[in-house]
Length: 65
Length: 258
Image (tube, rainbow over all chains, first blue to last red; front, side, top):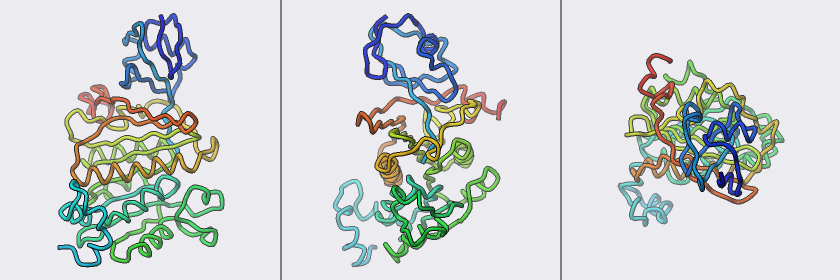
């Protein structure tokens, strides 16, 4: 499946947000995900499907200041 | 009624149709609590004091930080000078604000925010700015604000990255910080001491916290997105952030978990 991940085109095997995080090695604490411009809550990762052409952003929750 | 000096001082913002004399009076009488007076709190305070918050009879800027000024703060904590190293940030920030505008009321609290002390501290406060530097404080502040119904502007920065969100307890479908970052998530987010931080990045986020604060206090339309800034690619993003039904703090099942 072809998606845009963090502003780069990528071909991935994952079909859910949860699988994508595992595939990218980002399935870890402190990570946040947005799909097509909306934050996907951690508890919904496993059940949120990704589709051809989707835009995904994976980033860290930050706390410094 | 504004006096002549206030007309002269605040003239450029009085001209704005969304602001005007009524907006100025409204801001003057607000009590705003700034928690953390480092790289976020310094620029936020400059613009809040500059805008005239605390200039009215009822209003005040309340400045909370238990830290002292150190040499490594100076590149980005722009209110402080080398001859103030070792001084309380809360006291030094108050001294700056009183010098900037002797007509505003400023209260200094030289202490860290604590989960136990916050509820009492929020009495009479109209708005909180979270300018702290760690996840535990952020969750404690969010929890206290959600429970007390006090709006909160949360900003953060690390490395080249910044994040910003407005939390309005009680507003329809408005998320809280725990809707975004689950308190049970065991990650200990990196600190600027360990990971470094770029001065203008943390400064930009603090400045935008002041903007969001002024927008909210002036009654401009609410804005509940998660904003991200990447100083390496110079890229801004704004993500929709929904209130989470399963949020441990403000979700529908919250009573059972908190």
